[in-house]
View (cartoon, rainbow, N blue to C red):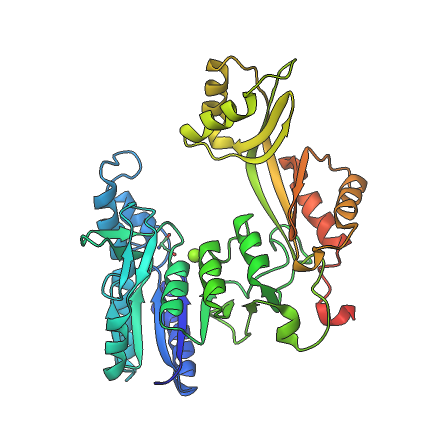
Length: 411
Ligand code: ASP
Ligand code: MG
């Protein structure tokens, strides 16, 4: 059989007939290159468009009168189902042999964690069956069903994950994520004027950037494609540019010995609170008690620093009050700093290279940014700062690593 290409189109790309004409063109190009195409769609548009996910949620006053997560999934799955049929119909009008399938029909079996279900397996038999008669199979994103036949959705922004999982299941040649920006940027362009789209990034880099606040692709999708070793592209629906290629290794891809960049991109996340719990003497078990209490209350903690007489960590601002209440009932007097931001510098090339952290600290200090906490792994350095400093900090790091200059021009 011909090679299969997966093309995923986000909500704005399928919002109007005008936008869907661009979608159609990308599908036609893939067919002209002799591919079979699995098209994964999100729900049409954004609220207040009538079939956007948030508009469907408004029909039941979510989250105010929210009673059944199982029923919410029946409702939410409709947005993508509608989109799949609308697009399939337009493809047929254009004489393209197309067929639409719901997530369940396309073989998505999930856990029963309604609203946040985990994909357990994808059995794409019906997709292959459909390819006997059709050239394009349009799959409704963001959904599946349990082994008992209950409809599920897989978490907000989940259509990217649908595309990656079906791509892995059919061993697609490539997974293309079409969106309204021209690929993955070196930083948030709303914050950094010099930000520019990246030609190639590694799976590890982009999943770190995505987990740390870059919104262009769902990190789970990247992990699935990485495991299946399928290259991805993130590109704009509206222009011809190829966007960003996501792959295992830049060196391999470029066929040169240009080393990986120290830093590829800067991501940021705001609305974080730093919590410090200290005692005068070394108290046995303080650390484990605190984190156990947080975990039991479903509070997600980050940036954990442990010392013999205390712990320092962060929680989302939305969970601060709850965390403080719990700590007080345990007899602690936490010190809190609200409105912090986490800035992350991500790059596959920093592994084993000395001096990257010191360069970051130096440039932030020179820019007058106070660092409240920091941490690092072999591909990411994180700093916690006051939210008011975030724009200055992201720009300072973007400048010091010369991210405005394309890679080829550095050598
Ligand atoms: N429509 C769903 C959402 O808004 C899934 C997606 O767009 O990826 O979260
Ligand atoms: Mg999305």
